[in-house]
Length: 304
Image 1 (tube, rainbow, N blue to C red):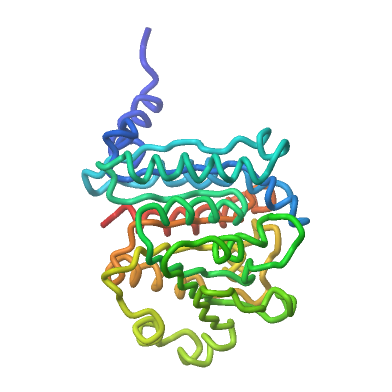
Image 2: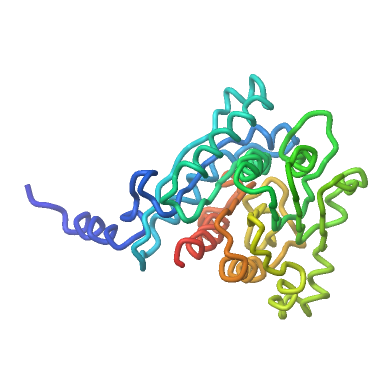
């Protein structure tokens, strides 16, 4: 039977794409940790759909051209049914699984956590705390995610961790909006150090987002003893780029600001742990604009 030349050509092209670099988790230099669940977002009265985000983002990443020899793999961690039975128990199990991955896959030089709701950053931080007692989080977000609620959800992860961490914990919040955060959410985090720069702060301090590097150097100097996490809540990005989120941001950060901060985190802070949360492909447009923007950031992480 004659082979279709179009299909044959498509198959050949895959050999030069990211998809060709997939390997076993134990052999991968880049490991994607997927938390494909939106239960925490629903508990926070958000819209359903972020559970589809990890696969939506990865499906774009896989098609991008490969220009290095890096191998990658992915592991699914989420158990939505367990979350429905006992959300707190599920978080505890996720933290154990993440700690096993961070400590066990010694070949990996980079871990990229894909949510799901921002609640998934809590078990990741718990896992990182087993590695280091000095953690610094760069959180790009419109919301502080330090709610004081009667039950945990995607709006509570940083206060949760601040109440439990061992050692030192610094949380650097960038892109925050006053209108998106209640007064109680803004209460101090006990022993944790929290630095907040609102959207307006960043706009003014960078001359309308044109002089970003100096701000990064001043606000986030490199600490060789710290373990860094770059955490991006997709709703921090301007709605013109990011429609597919539960809470669309009409005054979001420019994409190039986030991209430059990622570069700084990679090159200066030597960051190895990354998280992308709250993207909701159900509400993205037909061109998957939001997924493509996030895939571009993931590609930058991989192409080092």
